[in-house]
Image (cartoon, rainbow over all chains, first blue to last red; front, side, top):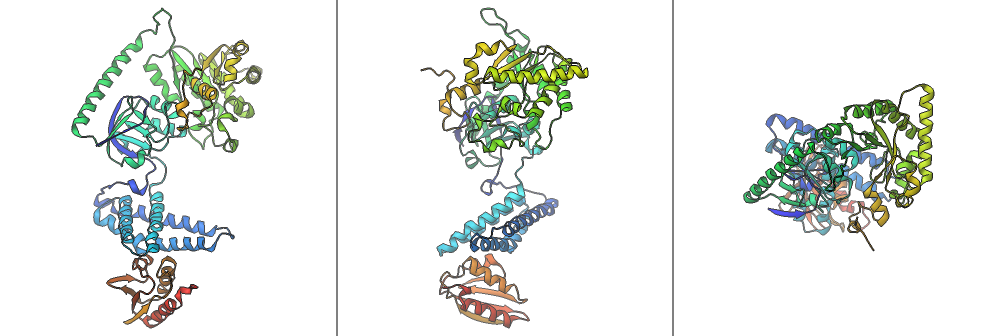
Length: 484
Length: 89
């Protein structure tokens, strides 16, 4: 049993088995198979071996002419090794003799061979161990692939251990069934926090080298509030956390009972509590908790969820109006696509070239530059506004001039819809997100042009303090109460 | 069956590249070819196996071939070893 620490992002306590994402040979675990599965495992192994050979042959065929001859020779050597019985045949024997998965067979054989090389006296030959391990690692990569299979049934009790989780993985995560996750990078303000809160499962971020310390299938306790991870707990500790888990669930239940009561401050002001959502599936949760409406629909996730499919005007229209129809009360505030440094669609090629992505062509800037994309979204929102209280919010506005441009685009689309006789709410409310310091400082002139504002604290603080919240090295500068 | 004792005379011994040349030549023959050194025996047609002999410079190895082309196989392998695997030193 041992304990490690990270930044807890809430969600209570989870107890489960570690499931490592981006595995390497080093942390693969033994996986028992039944006799009838042997042929399938061998087929998997052979396929991975074949793919590795193909990869190396392609590489060798494309070696530029000016590269030293050693490189080609090295590749030839590696290809030859792949046909060697120690690599190509031995793992097959292990699979059928020991009834284990192909991954474990590769690991066993890699270990055995490297032991033999360790025992050699010749220093040069000793070093060849690493060439061989590299070859095994390549086969292994082809065997496991890099995609996370969220439909894997074994995930039910899993605590995911990953290096990082990108916002694009988010949708996959939502449909998956696992009990907690931890990542090596991240802190209180990264996008992982949003994911964690949305999933309502315990999560801890910023757990350095987690994938080295934790092995697949280790029993792991995550305390998402304290940021504590206990690996392979003894019985006493395990029981203690089971007890705390029950208490947490009980407290949650009591909080849930409060969702019927009004939100009123001590001096008697009633506050409207709105929910934030990332996709239409979130709406049932909003209704369950009696939120008064949706204050922020991060519409960019519609375009990030499936890289190969572009969400059309019609699809957007259906999604927006369905959400509006489901809501019992309050508005649905749709923020126009806010692509940024940590969530970027593949079609925005410009982004990778930016030396300073957070200060680049993001948010409303990208929308204004991509006229077709922007007008399509505005048209979908306006059309949906016929079916409920839908409002528009522009992200990342930095000046009244920029806001004017966005509004004039909206007016253009409105006029077009009027001309075509399409019904929509002509007086649709328009607001902006205040997240750039210049907008905060010139709020007096900006506010006259909009119906509401929303304060985007994360970005506002990041831009004000010139610190990248995803950069662990400077995250200590993140101080919302900064003064002097 | 033909048996022949050889001395490794190239500087690096039976390292990866030299081994691969040896294995490539051995694979051209039908005969079963073994290389032994001390009490280790390697299949001359398996690169890993040959490398794991860890035969360095001045090691004495024994080539053994069994098959219809055993004679040619031994001659070819012996000349490769005596030519220092085509290396300059």
